Length: 125
Image (cartoon, rainbow, N blue to C red; front, top):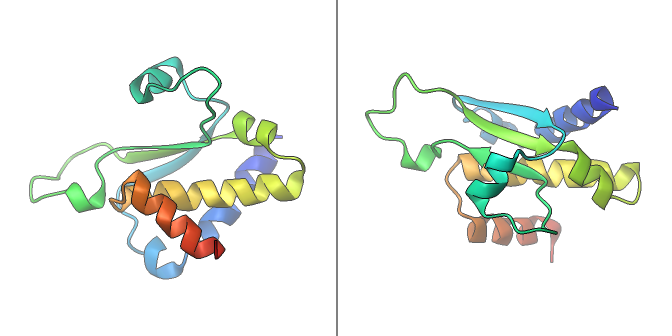
């Protein structure tokens, strides 16, 4: 099932407008089953909360002249929480795509509030 899920992540990435894809810089996007204990602690993720994706790194908006020789930023998409939350394959695809958009927005420097506002505008809500 991992290969199929990774294909959905690839589709989600391809749905990002080209103008943004060309601006991605020093970032890797990967799939893991679930967040690690360390990631949960760092986010102060409470029991019962669900995490679909996570951006870890230095957002482009915060990078300065001294941003050199650094490890890539990391966007992780968490397979199990997404599959558990979705009712069917179509909803898995939708959640994956939304999560990829969400985490890439963090890479560009958007905070959680701005990302949520952008999601509402994109979905027409």
